[in-house]
Image (cartoon, rainbow, N blue to C red):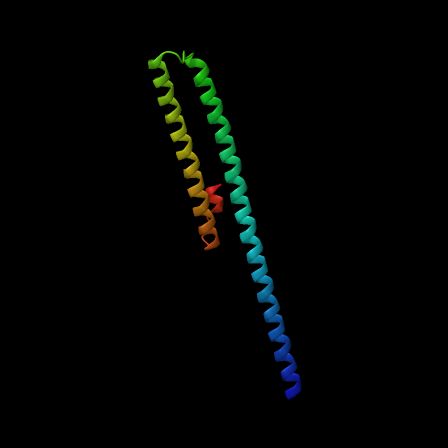
Length: 117
């Protein structure tokens, strides 16, 4: 009877260890998938935003019809370019901060990815 009990205990312990290892592997895979999804989303969103901002800046440049020899117009163009660059940097920075926050919260188990997307 004691050998049977020992075999049952060993089998139960092995099954529990296997289940724990499988669950840990699944959790790691899910975290990796979440990180990849967030990174791809951020890259796509930032790429689209950069394309849109470049198109908008190009259109603005075309509409200004600037004579670069005129000092007043050159200053105006510099101000417009600086404003566009600052806005683009702020938008991209905000996306990056959001992405990092989502990844950190997801890894912590907050399940915020559906809200972020």
